[in-house]
Length: 307
Length: 284
Image 1 (cartoon, chains in turn red, purple):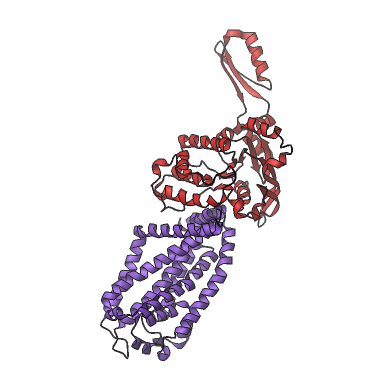
Image 2 (tube, helix red, strand yellow):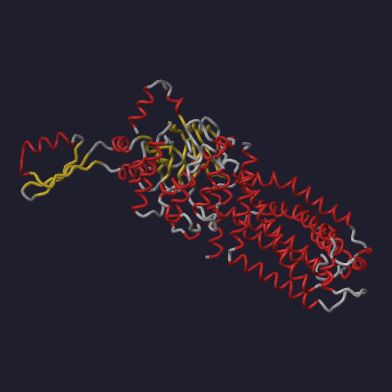
């Protein structure tokens, strides 16, 4: 994915703003006296997968709802696919996919029928090279609902229900997909299947994806870039790796020599281990090099920002 | 392919599906069955009583009135109830997320509520054919009148229900309040006993709302001509019926779209969550 994007950028799209799918500048949202968003800035380029992290109440859902055109911002500028979401028309709407946090609707409909019905709304909006909607059977297979095709929605389990939400979100083959906590309530298998699906969407359909999650492991696996939203501002923006380096270059090296265990923190783990082997050779055991995990990084960034 | 027209067509198929889903839903069937049986029982006990001042069976007058009431009940409360529930459970937001989804949603609801209304009217009408012999002598003109009264009744009450359902801050409460309001209105609208038995100011109040006119229109369609003597001024007041129901329809159709649009614009996932949390607090 990353390689693809670099090729794209190298092949004539000189101005990165040309391929910006989501552009947010100084975004502000105020509910009464409370300013939830206090000047949020970020850009998402075509085909990127972005994870939006942050503590509860940091404004993740508000941000996503503004970009979906479901909420009118109090200030600042926002563009999705070149259009102000507050004034997006139906053609613009057809290019978005939306998966919100909680739905409990259409309980009496059967899975296949519902997907088929929703898909039909997109039929007049096929673009060149992007036939809308996705065929229903293909879609059900992609999210693993084939065997539940004739079930009524109310009879699905929580995880199946969530997969249906995702299926409805992508039925129109969106250019941009917004996912608000898509994997809440998934078991590990469903979570892994979902991750595969996100990779496929991003790779095959070049779908730009903005998702919120509380699962840092998920953010690290899925996202090209991570945005951390705290206190109404973006406090970090970069790959998991880059964020970790921002917070601390130190790695922890653990090893044992002759049954005795050692720990050492260093900013040059490779050099340190090389010296270690030069010194002790085959006596070294239990070697482990641990860099800051995304969780360490996240906690450090959020704490630093609050402090 | 015109996208709006396309979505409207999808709305029709959506309404048909919603209607079929409700026809096989035990809760919905139960509700229709209980109300229909209750109404039929009332008519059964009225079959030997006569309309004061005539030799007509009371049931011959009550039955058409009841059909008028059913039209208003189903259309108004159907619209209020479905909007109340569907703002809460995310159906509306889902429609908002689709291109032209609100068009499909609204057309779907109009179709499903209308079908439900017509079916519940037909159930009681068929039962009535056995209880009220004079009904079988209704001519084509009478059935035609019934058809336009139902249509006009739907137009007068369905948009009104949509407006009430959209303006409500607390959807559950408004569904209950509307039920009470329509129930109270039924008591003063000459459905189960003639309007002339009521105090003058209550009569005047009843004249403002669609329910009295729906009952009157249905009576003019299905009761024997001699029953007109029991009405105010001894006439069916057909023109006034068209006038009042028409006025409610025009007002509803003018006001509903902007109010629905405003409501839809304000719907967002976090709002939905907030309302649900509040609802849970009330229960817990």
